Image (cartoon, rainbow, N blue to C red; front, side, top):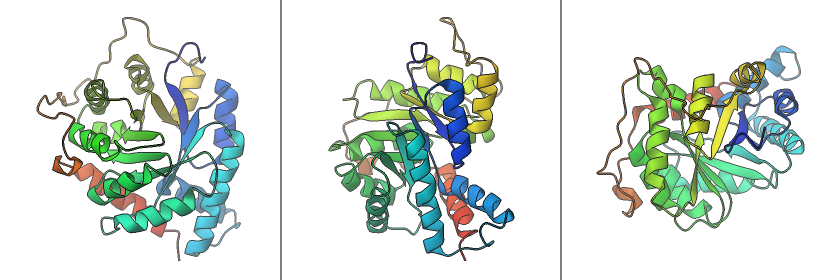
Length: 286
């Protein structure tokens, strides 16, 4: 399949068995993304099998997260494995940096995820000189411009993860954000790779491939649906139909080259997503 798909394919999840199965289906995987919600769901499932108590200590939870990503790394040793810091809106950049430095020691092929917030980008500005990073919970062209500028000094790979499915959920054309970011970044130096995330459908996958999104991360349920159709790829004349989704037009006034702090980082879905990750993780920690 590699010769048919220019995009790198990641699996999105926290279950090791799904990683192995996805790799077997496709024949390869280029990486995996994880987040606190996915890991929490995995740990909750294990607790029902009485392997873990319903509530576990913070240390136990972190050790489980570490074990999971280490097992994933063994399945995809050459791939990029995204590991997320735990943060809410009060978490400062210094704490995210401290967490990131610890997580980077877990595996040699880790990429550390920080949120697309002021504190997250303040952390990213430092971390991009020390390790691969992934800026998550991105929902706008303006946020993407800030990510680009905050990481211009990067010495390691930098990913940005626009969450298309969550925009679709509120009636907006999430894939158009990917399209807008790729267009804006085309005038840049290429140091930030767009990772199409929160993929919900085969159409999302096909359009991301058509757009030549550098990376696509796919949850196992959608991945299996794609696999059952023989890993369909878009035809040359492929057209994406957003149906009744509200357009998110390209904003010509948002240009690269400014101080990253001057761009508008506010987006309600970033705040909501950050809180959801936090709540899901804290829900398993006693």
